[in-house]
Amino acid sequence: MLCGFGRAGGPQVLGGRELSSELYALVPSPAVKAAKRVVLVRHGQSTWNEEGRIQGSSNFSVLTKKGEAQAETSRLMLVDDSFEVCFTSPLTRSKRTAEIIWGTRKEEMIMDSDLREIDLYAFQGLLKHEGKAKFGAAFHQWQVDAANFNIDGHYPVRELWARARSCWTRILLHESRSVLVVAHNAVNQALVATAIGLGTEYFRTLVQSNCGVSVLDFIPRAEGGSPYICLNRLNQTPSSPVAAGSSGGRKASSRIILVCHGSTQSNAETGFPSAGDQPMDLLGIIKSQKTAELLLDLKVSSIVSSPKKACVETATVISKVQEAADCLGVDCVPRYVETKQMENLDVEDILQQSSEGKTEIPPLRPGWLNEFEDKATGAVWEQSEKAWQSLLNEVADEAKPEKVVVAVAHPALHIALMGHCLNLTKEWLGSFHLDAGSITVIDFPDGPNGRGVIRCINYTAHLGRWSIPITRSTLEDEEFSM
Image (cartoon, rainbow, N blue to C red; front, side, top):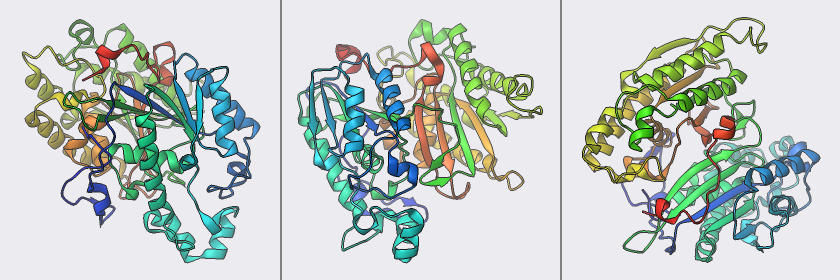
């Protein structure tokens, strides 16, 4: 797991280009005295969002009625949390969203100008077609190579990353342990990326929708210094994460949905995330049914699963519900869904062998994969690389240009798959978290041969009363600390 705003290491390749040294420059983050959870929320829909106008850091737009409703939904989602402080952008659309979510709380609200949206200078206020007509090549670079985009003598994305690091210093030095941050699309992307050590090349790779909620955990190290950092959730939205929408500013042509199987009887008895090939318990079955219902909004092309019983059961439930879409009034014709098992989606035996005799490793807490030996994580990483290539081959079907593939497996495998999507290394395994029954959505707006864009991570709102709370009690010290 990373312990700062970057990581040292050898060169990686992203989209055919070597990543800049910025990604690997280790920028230590301030130490935290106790576990700290930071919840990021993007503002609700604004008038300029609705018009398709480039906002940047201008302050002329306000929330629409839809935006106010989105903020109210977020308030209800977070109403039971004991936030100790709220940091917010001073721009009206963000400040108003923060006020709605904050409600009647008496705790402090801090305006931080560095949380304003990305500065886009001469682009601000233009409709997108006006920007293309007026700026031509510069606008094209903004669309395809934002990290190196230059306007009016500025590199906006590079400046944004520097601001995000500055914000983290102030947020982490604040004495609070449960923090709400309300800001904007680009700056929230930068906050997530800089926290886990990703450079400007990752701009538009981690989607932030209107009122989407992302969660980061900062966990103190026993020896002091920079904390462990884990992205617990990305872009949990008021609306369905599989509904039509853009990823990285573009429509997705293909999609991979990672589904974590529900709990098994063995999980409940041992408290360990991998304890043999067991069928799901009743709660696991309910969660699989909830996931199948959510996925009815999509025409799933194929379902692949690990051969483990809980994964096969989950895949079967999803397949049956998809094929009954006409009977359920969702589609006018029956759907046919190809289902199959893939051996390379199974990593549970690796984890089980590594954990034999170890009772101190708790189930699925933030960064739990970091507690396995290098040999085990290396084996998981190697296996997941084969699985990722298999999934890319599965989604790259020329006969079905808009193919949706659902993959059902253990959370550890899916965490590793996200790492491959982002062209990371196994050292990042502890930097992501997934819960049983969750879904993660990866879009390919440039097709399966292009870069994957992560639309959401660890989405559980579809589970209803069994969803995993976005926030936690700040009293859960013992269970949460490492």
